[in-house]
Image (tube, rainbow, N blue to C red):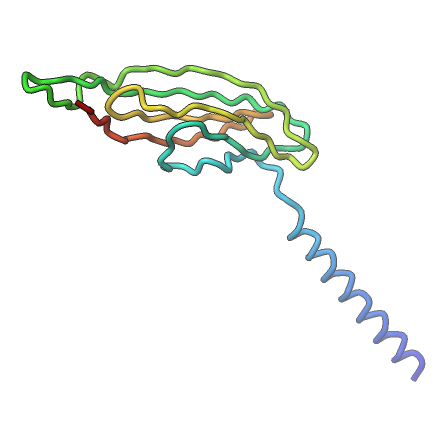
Length: 144
């Protein structure tokens, strides 16, 4: 009888340890490289931040490129889409991920230079690269 009780206690304590180990795996963040904000294909406008995650302490290189279309005016002073796409931004930043693996690039200006603009955000760390595209297709308004 004592043997059966000891055996049952051993089984239940092992199950508890396994369940706790599985819970810890769920709560541990993945260390893969990712851009968390803005999301892919999201509309952006004005000052914004770019944030993501990487392995804690990793140096992340963030590249920001954009292309836009010019504005043109017809004889009646109406605006329309002109030549493009024309490359505009080409910036690079180096950021170190924190102890929790989060990184953040503050105060990036996503202001449309012409008719519509598409931005490419690329993050590279430890041989891995992720890339997203965001846009500002807000058409300009002429105020007389």
